[in-house]
Image 1 (cartoon, one colour):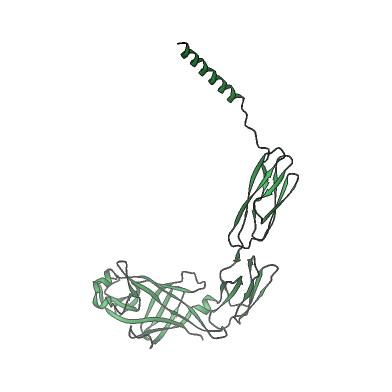
Image 2 (image 1 turned 45 degrees about the horizontal axis):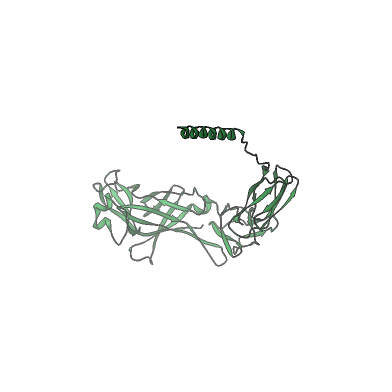
Length: 368
């Protein structure tokens, strides 16, 4: 009994001592704290100032590329140029004379090779345009185009492009090459007035056989910002709705929808439909053609043709796309059909015949 009582008294004493110990404990506050700092340094290198609290401050860098100096409570961190594309990080240990210390993280950006623009599209007037380039290494800026000059200012990084006036009646395309340490960035350059140089009179070309793309027949056409009108005869034309998804900005992309109304002929309503000549869904699988076949994409890009000196000689667009049936691809869209319907609804039951078939259609600008 006495033994049990002794153990009980001992336990109470331990609890009391622990309680007193907890009440008397005060956590020591670190005297070294960061007051103000910019801890990110540009890839080009340089210095940044860090203000800390504490007495008798000293500092040590954990990396060779970062050196430090101390003046009172100001630590100056100086980084060499980072010649890697990857950023790098280290830390500074700031220590007071009483032994308190703190770790200060430092990050330096990787070197960049940047241009302020990815392409340059301008109007027909003669004018100057400026963009900037930067790299941790020397830069060269060149171009083979003869209708504009470039001047690169090494000190500012500014590239000035001096355009001559474009009176060709066609868009002009060229490029500027910016190179640093073997890496080349190509900046496409376009000069055009959308209304004057892109829109207007065209020739609509097509072949009479899907398997033969060597012999083209051409008919008159007109391209506007909303339609491509093709004149199959003096009395018959089809107005095909189109769109420019870039809003008339270069590069000039043209979208054409499938199963769209394009006019009337002989009392019938005309629609545009797409097919692949090899499968000939319209002729062999009419039900598939009208009920399941769709064009996953029909698009063309107006390409500027140039001579050896970079001068524009033509503007053309070969339409392309894929045939899709229940998620399966059945090759390129090679056939444009002008389909006649009994009424204004596109359907197999309203279909009465094919008025025209155009294989591998293309448009080419007429320069007056």
